[in-house]
Image (cartoon, rainbow, N blue to C red; front, side, top):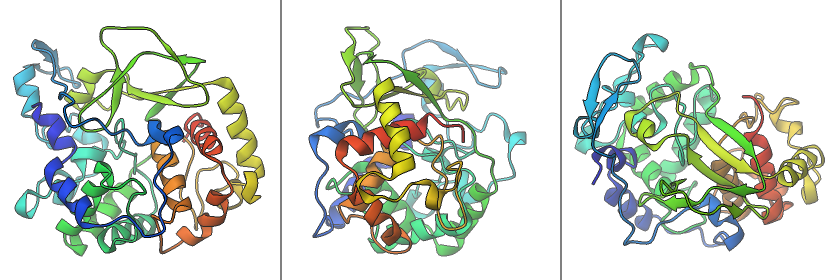
Length: 330
């Protein structure tokens, strides 16, 4: 097992138990096959991805580490540029009671996230606290039963105290947003492989490309740099011109729901007082949230304002909207 990846997906067995303890919302409809790209789930016998043996230069350029040493790095040790952000509260970098994972295990110290994990830098404090409260209460679950990422967030939100969660929200809200994604406009994506913990990466053996056919594909620029915690390592998003064009039109029209995204999320889609920023976000995350809201897996707070717009989108529309939003500058 690569310890870093096990840590990133944060005590995965505990997360699965947590997800199992929170049932799918009674009215929730599981995501259809057309959205499988946004809900990647590896078969139980999928092998874990290990960093190849060798020596690697740290992102700050100061040290060479072996793969075994990289494997043991903590979130605090992966904070290669501490001068680039405020001093984080302990909840961000240090495991809590009963080894509750710190926020930076997944979302990174600068809030950028990584493939399969959304960026949270610059989100409004109240929005972050509302989402954490929804995870704690069970108002925010996944339409896909036992989806690992959601199970982990439920576990983590319940493990930390309200005081710690407030400190984490204030810290991440204070950070500037970066550009975590890089959209590659193409009709076909490279051959992909699915990692055990539910994220995709480019097949190191190469292989034939596959037509996107209205879907989206995602992968880190470099798996090794992901293991290193290199925050310059962006997420590649493969999406077709037709999908981007449809997404742009749906943003303006609102699709079947008739409510343009800009009505609440701002003309530049960078958020308003009542709605979070959408521009430049991970498309898989956006697609999951649209389906989870549409299927009633998410409830409470301002989610009710999104139910009409989400239910007016087809699965094809959801993919197009998510792909287009990923192409915008945060």
